[in-house]
Image (cartoon, rainbow, N blue to C red):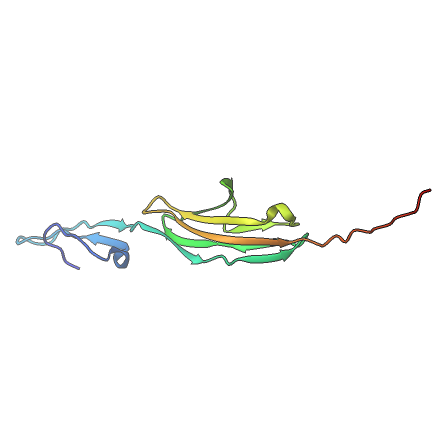
Length: 138
């Protein structure tokens, strides 16, 4: 690409890379080139979208979430506003009733708005059948 005047590029995600500037004019060409790398900021975008999950009590819960962008997005899981600084994966080793709820995976890199997706986690609890016994007194 030859640019003789200041230039504005559109669709810049296609123009990421290393550029070399070699000066020249009517008298001749310059002898020293200057190289620059063009980095394109790209908002976070999900590449792995987590799905709702249902598990039996005491079973593990593993839900993946991932995103791309530049700079690389950070992934955060939250439940009831409580943050869990985990990367890409919500991992509960032994689930219990209190793990049931709505979890939110957030991908953010400071470019544009953070991306969020809700995941419904259901933990099915074992039924407890009461044992009834009685005796006659009197």
